[in-house]
Length: 433
Image 1 (cartoon, one colour):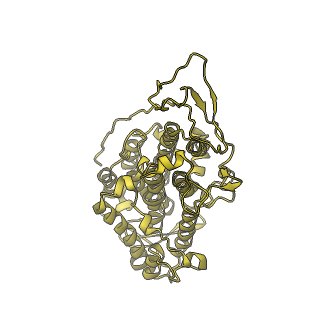
Image 2 (cartoon, rainbow, N blue to C red):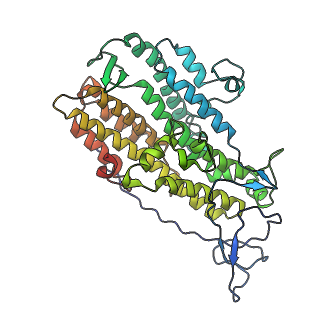
């Protein structure tokens, strides 16, 4: 395996704020200000008060829950994200139903308004779909249609291959070079000739290409939050047409929806992490590892405080919280990639290798490695791993022999794990259990 070592970049955040006088209709939570008597007009932090206020520290408290109201009406709306998450949850089970056609799967993925793609009639009536939001962030793909097409083609190919390669061998025992089924404890795994589960590639790949990319590289991007007149309108509490929220508030909420859109109580989602099969589920899994305990609160608190900062017109604070979210959610992807590689290694080094268990873990690991290209360095406009670097890691996972995962070695899994962990603030050992 060709191992590439990348330097680790540490990031520190400095928060500052200045008092504001342009909010004539305060909305909870209100900033509390404390200015000393000898402060004068002007701004040491670089924020222009226009001579209308004295620079001072502004404390924007982290709300207890994700509840924001204006004139007694909620200003939080992420219905579009909830709709797409519900669509995804109808697709995934069909990937293990051998009577499902490729046409059905592809139509669900690229749903068109009015088509009877889903069992849920409300989803059929929706003009939303998942494919149009896959590899579709402003920061990464607004001027990169070539990679966008390649990535979307991957998902189409995995759906097609599940039907054409795996379903015909659904009741045949898999072996090196032959698709089929493998036992995994009380479960059965369905793999292609190289040992990969296409359903896991589709699911885990979308965690990065869809939910993560939209949250981090689209809705939390300053290019989207501050697009057009968004900041001016937010400063004056000018609401979107026929809505209770400003456009900037809504964009932040849309990022939030990709993480918490299916929680029973989206205002307090950490109570039931695992509400969907995407980011929400794996925040919960990483939170359950004592080495990373507290990461779920870190992410939720940053979402709450960033939203409160928008209400308070404190954009430096908003962007600092976005940086925290980008770092922490990117870590979720990397931690799970290493976790699955190491769990698979443990299954393969047994006297009698547990191939079903190992290949299931490696298929999940493949999807999380694929998702690394959609992570986001909080101090940069780039991911932790580029597309070409991610592609190289995936090639290395499968090139120990002509039969892919059937030939992978423990040395390759360790090398890949170290390459990933070295880019982040955790060790292989921390992520492995």
